[in-house]
Image 1 (cartoon, rainbow, N blue to C red):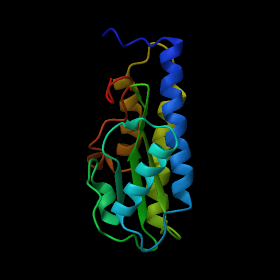
Image 2: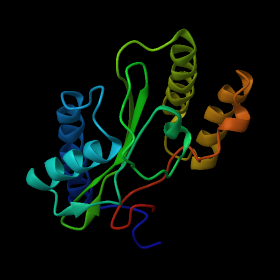
Image 3: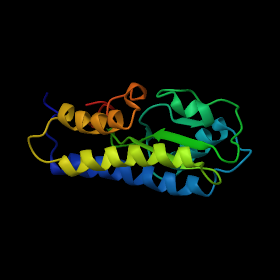
Image 4: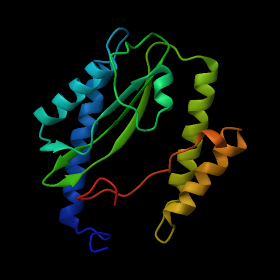
Length: 173
């Protein structure tokens, strides 16, 4: 509980870790393409973050494509990315012992109408939770806001992961 409230200096370190992860994602947008494997994506992202200031990785980087993106804690494989597939990245950097964590989904080529629909529903749920964010609102309340929207669209049983978590000296705080 001592780390629940972060000092300005601690927040700066989390932000520095996040900035490295964000630069890593920007780099990956030029790397991800048809034919590259999930493992190659993972290794490239890890190398980029470590080369650009991360002292370590927040956790084992997740890089999944196609049907594998439905696995919340899947392990990258030698599966090659195909045109028209989603690629999911879940990753983070460590700076001075402080962690970041981000998840991003991109499509290689043009997504189908169904992919656009589901992506839009997730974006709507995320936006609603972010709009409700303010002092005093609990994570459980924000999770319910997002979960209700996804359920309203008929995908509630597919929302098996929580909305999010805090970060700090441990990846889940």
